[in-house]
Image (tube, rainbow over the protein chains, first blue to last red):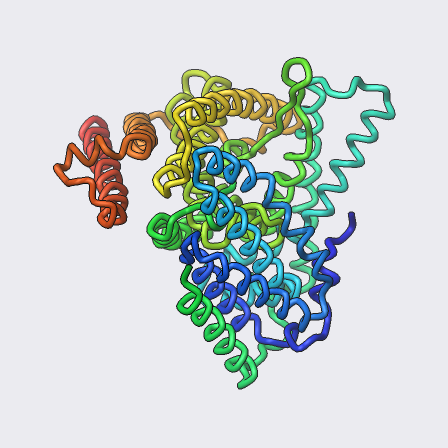
Length: 234
Length: 281
């Protein structure tokens, strides 16, 4: 579990990968707002939104099934509520709940599968999201897998020493040691960063200009979403 | 409880996005002010630590286990502003990369967990930290989970996700169980951390501002209760305000309700501040 498959996907070189992260982020928001305001009865619209996503995934040369499988992570939660809604007699709404959450997840996934983390965080920063928050997001993502792996290793080590699987105090100790190691790692990271000339922010490699193709892409997405939302009413 | 997109009605997610964005900006500014440079990587690594610590299973009773949620732990260790910021960063990553919580619903999730949850943890820790530390940490963990979960439930109900009374009571029961679990796990984790190095956990603040903390916590819990009551029985509120059962006006009702609750909160907070100032003068 060294790296997420999303990391590999996001390093592709399709036309969609080359679009400016700002354009893709804006397109995502437009899509999500259109989807979220679509009434449950407009089932044709949901099919059209799905078609839009399939076209985009196809242009990005991403495996549709892989994307759908990851987006299905939302389903346990939304299926529970969809079932509750079904029982209360509103089957159309139940279907719409599941569809909306799944398609929204898929759309967000499409953004991060075509844009590296540094890309979309730079887009957020250009939209005046606090720099401190951006820095923390970047650090959390960078150390997520390092520390998760450390936790896994500690669990195995405890098991190898014949600890009962579990024990409340053992788990607490595990968390304590994990905390201590994380803390010391953060200290080391800070000194290494200072040695490399860190001045309080990560400098992006080359700020790319917002090209005509990006504007075209954004307007196409906008037009598509608005058309679906307006034309395919129930 | 991460709310995905598609569950909240437009007025609810839009309102909470509008509320959360400036709040996060304020929290970020505070965190930046309180944080020395060397703590920037620390905040990030602590976020990653919470992710990893959530994978550690705590056995509670036969066949059941819980895990750390971490909001209260971060609040006790890093202070409220930094904890809010780290939790917000985690929520952003979960929404975009792990499909855990929606993007439009990010404002709601940030409000529930990173703002209200941390506020509940911080206020309890501050209020009871002087008298009984373990009790205070337990309350911080339990109340932060309870606050977040009740807000999420209230928002779902206000958005019109249909739930029968039985389902609502069952979820409330579930929340209480997970809140108690989070309290116990947070106490155990903080104790384990303190055994390794007591300096890592910040002590509770001086007692002079306990009144503010008490009034703040009381008003926060009142808001939670108010949200729940308003969402379970909107008709009662409607009768109270003398409006008819007009379904078109419900978005106004939502906004008016949220606004009213915010006003109550502000009034309680300011009142508490005045009282404590008079006492210390």
